[in-house]
Length: 98
Image 1: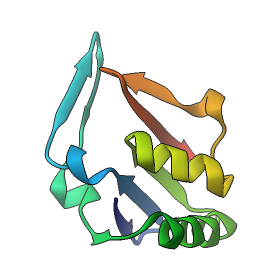
Image 2 (image 1 turned 135 degrees about the vertical axis):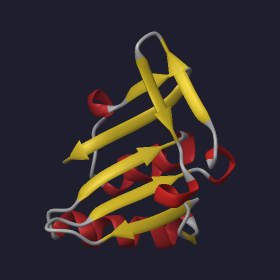
Image 3 (image 1 turned 180 degrees about the vertical axis):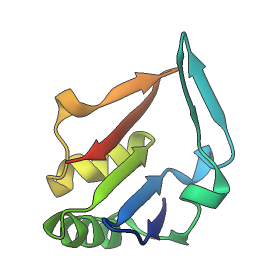
Image 4 (image 1 turned 30 degrees about the vertical axis):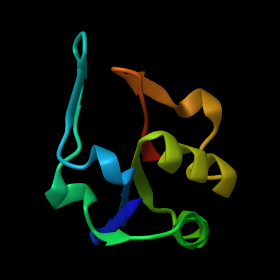
């Protein structure tokens, strides 16, 4: 999985499954482009991501999470809940401030 931190007024934490980088998913009027420039930062293990996500959640960051492994990790970290996950073309996504 990849994680990239975008520093702004409120940090934006972008997390995506490695195999989704560079792909676009569409379903009806919904679309997401998993751009390298936004999502491809440092490659991390699940354990490393758990710690990073929990730390940024405590700092009131915004999260953009795409992919089965990334969503599963975010759920385990306690930063999102199942009802906050949507799917586009069968790819789970959670966007926003949690």
